[in-house]
Amino acid sequence: MILITGGAGFIGGNFVLDWLADSGAEGIVNLDKLTYAGNLATLESLKDDSRHIFVHGDIGDKELVAKLLAKHQPRAIVNFAAESHVDRSIHGPAEFITTNIVGTFNLLECAREYWNGLDESAKKAFRFHHVSTDEVYGSLSATDPAFTEANSYEPNSPYSASKAASDHLVRAWFHTYGFPVVTTNCSNNYGPYHFPEKLIPLVILNALNGKPLPIYGDGQQIRDWLYVGDHCSAIREVLAKGALGETYNIGGWNEKANIDVVKTICTILDELMPRADGKAYVEQITYVKDRPGHDRRYAIDASKVERELGWRPAETFDTGIRKTVRWYLDNPAWIEGVVSGSYRDWLSKQYN
Ligand code: NAD
Ligand code: TYD
Image 1: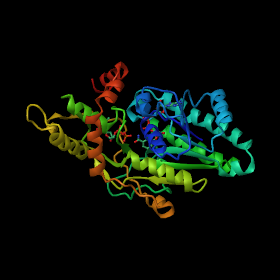
Image 2 (image 1 turned 90 degrees about the vertical axis):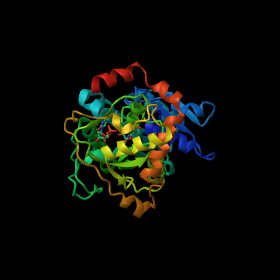
Image 3 (image 1 turned 180 degrees about the vertical axis):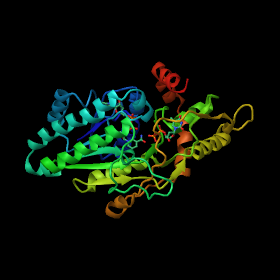
Image 4 (image 1 turned 60 degrees about the horizontal axis):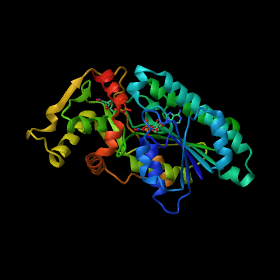
């Protein structure tokens, strides 16, 4: 058994589906609070799979986490649970502190207590894998080298600061208590089951609905993009073979300016689902007010994970983005299920 937190979210959900696609895989206990970002519809295909045990709850609930660990005796924990959206962290940082920092602290403490009680061989085999972001390293200029694991932490948003704090806790639990941790810091993910508040799914859905495609500032901000299935394979690799106490940068070797990402999506949609009026989707691009403190560029040097563990992404941006657009066209029921009233409230608050 392994315990996953946040497994009804975008990356956690993909991780659970990919893991259980292997018929020989161990079972998963999936602890998720089902915030606005958690969707059980993502896990619908597992409803009759006894290897998946879903538990609705909070990583900050000490009693619940301790009970789950005692009952299921997992050999590893993978912590995906987090508040993950930068723009929401600007409007309301409190939840980010509660879940990302205090929640991770609670999970570490419950896990350490459980681990202390294991017999020697189980103790040696145990892993706590913390899933984090490249945003903890701050912002790069156009000519800076990509982030390596040796970069200092310089987070700039409430989101990245809360993730940085959680990474520091994880690190300290290794150095102080010998608690067996690994951390991965990954670049921007995209792919199926992505909640449409983030750039790529938002643009796909807005395009199809005839709405503006909002570009913050000049659109020249750069992100490294990784297809979510590749992130999941990297986590499986690090969980299996990563050295304890180490951190690994995970990235797609795919730096793109936001405006180019949006134009690429428009071109694919022009081909797969042309507008009824015959016009191009790029006509819907609208420049809007920039995000406060907007980081200019993220870039990941993922050579350590390749050198030490042999992992490289399988998808290029061109193959991954095409699959992603196709997935959104083919899954209207999932989309219908997530664009609830609270989603519409968010859109009007952010983009009024
Ligand atoms: P997401 O927002 O889509 O999903 C987060 C999940 O965590 C949701 O299912 C939510 O219900 C759950 N959750 C939130 N608070 C919880 C709590 N207190 N207890 C239990 N569950 C809770 O996020 P995501 O994009 O899937 O990101 C997953 C992890 O990967 C996060 O830790 C994030 O920081 C990290 N990450 C994300 C990206 C990215 O591009 N999305 C890149 C690098 C790292
Ligand atoms: P996002 O998907 O929110 O991820 P992150 O902020 O974690 O990188 O945003 C990706 C980039 O796209 C980021 O530079 C902000 C920009 N962006 C827009 O230009 N318009 C939008 O409507 C959104 C949501 C993001």
